[in-house]
Image (cartoon, rainbow over all chains, first blue to last red; front, side, top):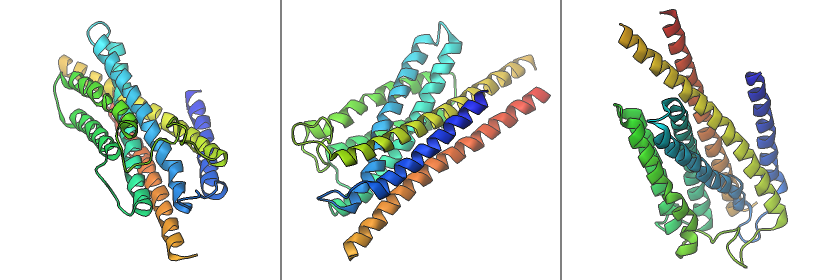
Length: 233
Length: 47
């Protein structure tokens, strides 16, 4: 039953992705200022926004792990798996954002990269969560999960800074398209296409988040069995 | 189509391809990890 539900959901995600792609390439109008290159927005913006969501899931997982690690170790392990899954999927989305951004910037601004506030804080966010994943991958010992949870909480502090960076400071990066004041906004035809792609990438992200969570839970079960077997030997 | 249009088209294609390579690459990594964990648990059950 679970397998069937996941397969059905994966099919819906595939349809959404194809629909989003079709809308982005064939339906959306060209931007009046930038022309065809602005179509990168339909992959760049959802990746950036959704990376925040997955880092938020990692934050909740990290807090949950720290809250339950003494009183309810079983629940703490589940929170820890969510924390890891959120961080990993967030890094994937953030990597997409950091690679599509320079491709767009090269054509729109004539440069691949600039050390402005939005770009730099996003790079710092990515580096913090890559450190988190490296810590989990290569460190050993009973304190790794606790250290990772603290780093996950620390890393999440950068998320609101990234979000507010182009409101607080003058940046090369454009001002916010949504909620950026009276001059902000988007043509309704473009907004609808962005909405479809946001939904498609959200659905895709949820799918891979659940897969990553299940892999981690399986890993935890195996580690527990190995530890028990070692004690019995 | 002038040179700028061709370049814009190539850059949009590159951005979309990079996105899909990263996302599908990650799914492939997850698939390998899942198989490895499954094999590990089967081996533990046999013991």
